[in-house]
Image 1: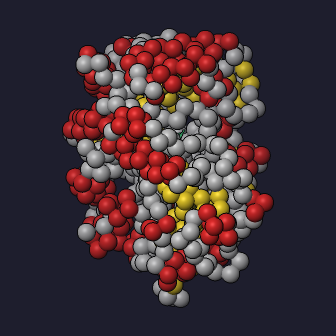
Image 2 (image 1 turned 60 degrees about the vertical axis):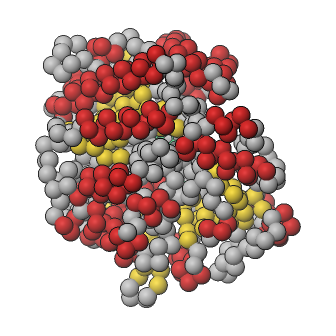
Image 3 (image 1 turned 90 degrees about the vertical axis):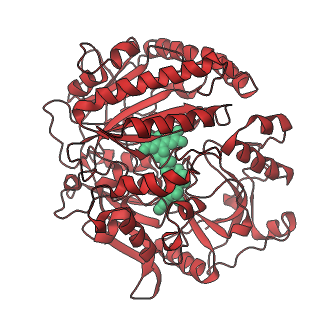
Length: 602
Ligand SMILES: Cc1cc2nc3c(=O)[nH]c(=O)nc-3n(C[C@H](O)[C@H](O)[C@H](O)COP(=O)(O)OP(=O)(O)OC[C@H]3O[C@@H](n4cnc5c(N)ncnc54)[C@H](O)[C@@H]3O)c2cc1C
């Protein structure tokens, strides 16, 4: 429960919303709305980190009576602002339950008092699955902070499982597993995401089997959702006729849409299958030209395909207006190779989080109206990366998987991103990338010819397998129905997922148009030998009104991509029906859910 001692001091200057007319006019689409919402908050005298108790709120925000929550829970008012700063709300009532039972009490209270609940983890998500920008108390949304108390973790080395409450951070889960000689083979790069938040969107890292490699027991090449053994969630319970904590085993047909739930429930606890800890080697390269890395399929040389064959784990970060990307590979290595440097902690690429003055000056210029600086920013970042990899001795590291795969800190540049999961045959990964890189380069150059610079952050590429439920080693395990890496039923040969993200500063002029065109290209180009799903956590569904607004994508492309080739009881509609059955009062539905999964099917 929140106490006065827990609260941040009023007026802590963490982010201040800008009211400058110039800032607002410059933004397009979603970002224009974001700026307007931020301006409204700033106008009300709020700083974004301020938290007010009911008594303080009565004085500072008259007309906002605190909801009377079940006994023992006191809410406070707090602005919701996501990591990139694009989603900012008015102050919303927020509460931190101390147990799963308290979450259930809140759900019963919300259902009978016409309120909605939203699990709030570390607020890293880009897509507004929690709340939309500009939401006010009128929307009667109670934010449920999971990170304060719902953080317990236990490890069972014999069963090879880790059980974590929904608000436990990924880093804490990985540390707990690591301390008992266990690990997760691939996972998201930031440690400060909750396990509940990561499951909500099917979190992933990068990994496919290298040539001749067999899957280690307890590991998956699919998403984190595919590692779930069982989960506890607060859902409608038909026996008691109200919301209650319910355990779902992995064989329960209703668990399918809960495994990747888009925030349409609150997961209070989850048991994950984990693997034996095996050390890895992570090497960085910055001398491979794009023409070689993204070469035409079948070409000789250091292509992405060649690294997938030798290591199975590859990430590419291509800074804009550069031709030598930062390529990372990971491979299992029991002993420390002679040339590797051993590391016993994560976040080894200090230079990518702690921005040098030269780079932050360029950031500022872009954000204050000189977008063409993107042509200098990309090369400058590439150069600093190349130098720092050598001078800080991090180009060849060896250690526990978590120490090599957690490498994004919260202070990394606050960019926005689009995100797509392209399913294809393993043999077609190079073709997917060859075509995408050609498109990306041509499009960025075409804009530049017209003095437009919509992209100022990197293109990021990772590759995983699909969610094979057999990986969790439970006979009859159910597939994560709404995971972007769920197998396309009509294409069993598509065993690989290429994750594509393009990053740019929120509000960069012409970025909305660029993202719209890019999305249409992706959908059209990968319509025959490959298939497309949206990456839930990122930007997708672009229309002239912004991200997550394109009716055709929300109502046709997305549902079809989950129903294609599936029996009627395993497609999108049946997943939505299960979510409705488990949340008949729609207490967990955000406006984005209302557009994507409209009440009564729309
Ligand atoms: C810099 C950065 C790097 C990232 N890198 C990766 C990456 O490498 N791989 C990857 O897969 N993703 C990555 N992400 C995306 C990130 O994993 C997701 O946005 C994730 O949802 C964030 O978790 P959170 O705790 O911050 O959740 P929040 O942002 O607080 O919430 C996200 C959604 O999850 C729901 N949710 C939260 N907790 C629960 C719960 N207990 N039960 C049910 N629903 C819940 C929320 O209601 C909301 O709908 C990255 C994000 C950022 C900002």
